[in-house]
Amino acid sequence: MKKRILIGTLIAVLLLVLAGCGEKDVHGAPEDGETDPTASGDREDPGKEDAGQEEAGTYKLPAGAASEYELYKTVLAYLNNGFRSEDLKTVCDPVLTTVFYSKWEEDEEEIFTLGMKYDEACDLIARLRGKASQMDAPYDEYGELEEDLIDFDAFVEEFPEGMRGQIERNRRDFENFIVDIFNMVFDFFHDGENPFYTDQTSWEVKPEGEYEVKEYHSNDWCDDLYENFPKVYELALGTYISYEATEEWFYYTVIDGQYYFLSFARAVSGIGG
Image (tube, rainbow, N blue to C red; front, side, top):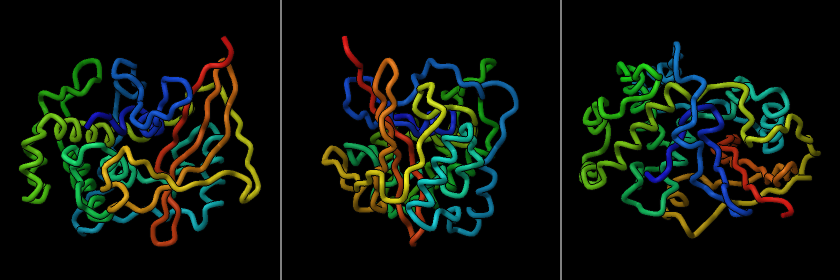
């Protein structure tokens, strides 16, 4: 994959960062050289929670929100209460978000959930997540994952036979995908980070229906995103003005009548000059 997903903090890894003048960059993320505050010391292992689901064979999503407005208020509570992951746990699922991003590619050869419906893909990602959590992850003295020491072949058996040729043809992309799984297991939950990288601490909670929502679609991406993942929507959170203008929104989807947060996103443009 061209992007790295779910690396670092809860939101930094889900954030679509723009480094240009007002154009949305759907593959941006903190640069690899940035220091991860969770890189050293003891690591909690939320991936172990998936073990029972893996045995059952069907991944279960969290409760979700009963309505769009309930989801909106939940996300705004997260933003206004110090960015605590606990505030999102009923509406945000790392496995579902990983599936979302796994299908967000220009080239179908880089999609390792290609042709899988979201629920089948969730089962696969949960198994990969569980396998990664059970491994003795090779971290160096600085807390950096030593990718060369990962047993990537151990993950191939979790994929359908029909996909293994694709894996071998795109081995480096596959290995990047598995590295993302490792980083998701150990670093998905981390509190206190503003997802928009600004000094903003307060967001207006608007009345129901007084914010902009639109269905997401772009011809830039492979159709697998639209054919095998539920419809994705963008909910606008406005623009924060500092030394630059930061347009803010989040992505969500609806599954079986329940609403799920997928990712924060931003677009940045300069002011004046």
